[in-house]
Image 1: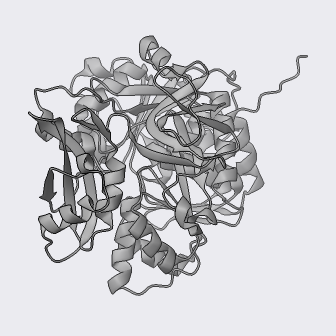
Image 2: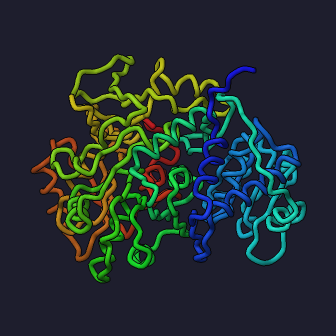
Image 3: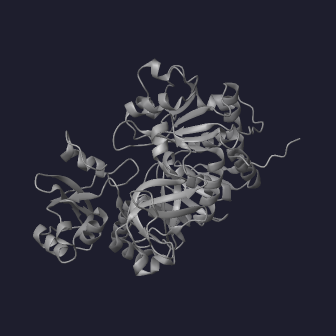
Length: 520
């Protein structure tokens, strides 16, 4: 008999669920607690129900759920079957949901009835989906859908484990492009095994962790939740982020670990100004997805202590390309770095011709790892362009120090070319952020008849009004002349993506409608 050397995703989690049987695995938004044994049993029931309907290795199941226990159960069931999941965010537009269901060739769909309005009206858009399951808190179930609880009650609890080959698809996760339809990022089973092990190690999750997940599970958070469960942690899930609720949960449940995007950290800091709360149990705040303001980071370190761990990753290289350690956060000259490559990755800085650049020179950040994307689904041309040899092209611009620390200066598509000169928006943002009275800032390029593009700043104030001319003088003293904004716009808020990142694409769209930019 041939010797099996590949440990599948389903195998990894089946072992973990058995190991921690009586321990609490999840605390749902309702406060209900679910043990590892219950997770194992319920995911077995769902896996058997899906298997009876033809789902197995190579099959694709779409999951359109809010942050809830059912999402985790569905995730585990798909892994046990050796199938692939397509996580769909509840903030997606209906036309994008329809596209993703068609494009992914999903044969299964699990949806919460409160999100049924996002489903296609046309049965033709659902014709390939032979298995349709609806989770409901109350009320009716859409026609042609089977109700979740009754399905599980009628299914066997017998353990399920289908061994998918290492190269089989385990995840298709969609990411927006600068133009055209969303791209389906494909990750194979073996790559996902390596990735989840890297996440367990690099996120500093222990077996006794009390974790908080408030960001959408269909995005990066489902992988962090997986890492916690693989380790034996207890994971609190909320339906969204509320700073006062978060502070209350940290205090009452003595939470030790949480993931946030920078805007959440800012809101927590503001909440702590008016609401005192015991946050002493926290020992790790993992953050990422967008740049953090250095003044806000310094303030957070003063308030929370040295518990911050920054992560830099992409959908194409999930969550962990580099990390900035807790100790590095205390070194002022490293506070603008996104950290050093993690154990499973290598990073280089490449020039336009694909050549590796010397240390300190700015170029494209490229990554080599066992868990970079296998392909863009049904898009061989874009898949080919994603790599330079073995190196994934991230589309980020940055430089690297001898210690391996990476400093990002911009997204390639966000760089402003003004009068033929490159302006890195993050550099301008960092300078503006140090001006008293500025809460948030985003810098983009807008059309300009003289310069091609002009640097424009969009500023949210922390309180009283400021004089734009005073802000410009602040910039002139700290930036080269061509980098100083030609326009300062005081706004009430910065548009955000569904995942809490500043949405520069939406801002640019107001100015570039009917026009094309030279980049992005």
